[in-house]
Image (cartoon, rainbow, N blue to C red; front, side):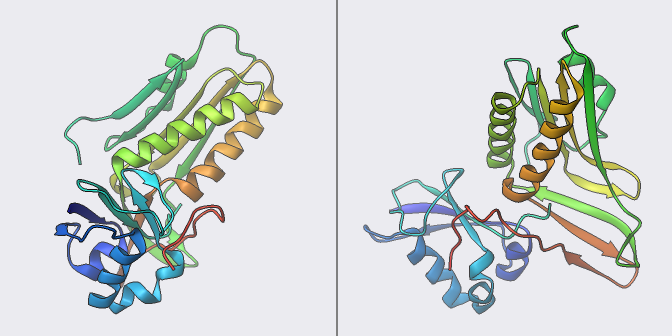
Length: 238
């Protein structure tokens, strides 16, 4: 049977490619797929406890059996392309998007407003000019786009159902970003301020832990993929 295997972030650099179409015998599970590539690229084995496997854009346990036509993705710890821009999901007034252009928070707020709001809380994550004193030139963000957008929408819906809020928006930039630019925005509308603040905080915290988005940081003297960590409930490869 045939499957497509995807690599993201630092894993793409390790294997020297972002995608490979490969043949596997019947009865192959995801752990066996990972072991195949670990044998070719030993560095994957060193990172196994922080690599997550996705099957058809859903997190999957390593014992999951492979089926013909599956898409398997190996995902490094999140660091917290299509031609369409933005890639977006609009659901019951909530808004979730990935974009390679500047995030216009005022425009997003305008599409969320219904007139019933007593509070609008906006969180913007911006590009710092340094990491632990090491001057930063710029960042590059990449992601598993279809899965990332699906996960963002799931987080937003769950937050909206858990707090007394009106609407939720999560928007993330992709591509090259300069110091001072907004990389991510979480916006929550609500009748009252407390649930809006609490929901926006949960939104950014969960996005940084489970949405497959990675960043590479560029310095005067080098570059590095930023290593974060997955949520403790996400199954890892090793």
